[in-house]
Length: 358
Image 1 (tube, rainbow, N blue to C red):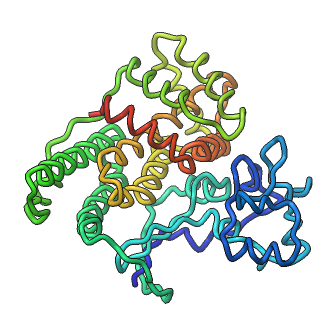
Image 2 (cartoon, rainbow, N blue to C red; image 1 turned 90 degrees about the horizontal axis):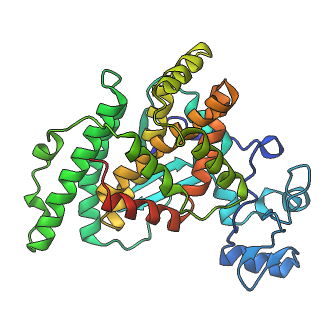
């Protein structure tokens, strides 16, 4: 079994009560059966044993969380008391035959800080994983995964090629993913074999730069308004952003001013967006082997950059300033609403399936 992970993976360390947005609130925390049984035998309170989650208050905060941001369970019983969800987050694992891919969720403020502080290119390491693989895999899905690995390797190279504009990088990734999706669908429709895929031709497909009109950007923004939200914080942020940006005819000058402001703080917006795009492509693209929405997953990754850029622009236009800390905060707030919500992911992918970016 092989283990794949980004070079910053082992640098993560939870900052506990110093965290500006705790993972102990905003969503239901599911408890695995083994931990649930242990809690029941120990008489642990604040557990909804019927629904297999921790009890939470009216603000959706876990009732085991103290006002100072520390966990009552850990303080009383040690870290070994944690259920699988709490012990694992923000670590994310995608499993395939003979490969286990590790990533860190950018919805965690400390992970967002690790990723968005990077100015250089990110590397990925592969090594042996001692944990045995006990899963049964679908042979067809695993065959597709091998092709998706090839595509993702190409995407990583494209994303980190700073000789290309972000619009070119986004356009190239989407054109390749779209070509692959169409080729795959045609083969499946004709009951063919995947070895008919001309992967070299797909990787060298012609592309167009990603140029969206202001109207297109507004439509993409409106997708977020159809999401379910963990708290009112993000829905309020959307309302302010819409009022700030999309009541105007154009914001080209404001975008340029924002980039100049960030540069004054030593931040290049294109590098930050590069890291965000790379994160979503690495963490989730190959997982589309299990749902066959290859183009949809690539579009979703590009869409995240468009959405976060809108949130950033609104912040700059309202305050007259923007820093890397602001970009980090907007990124993890956005990711909390998207990457842990299947309904929000499907809602966004459905829109883009009907209104593709390329």
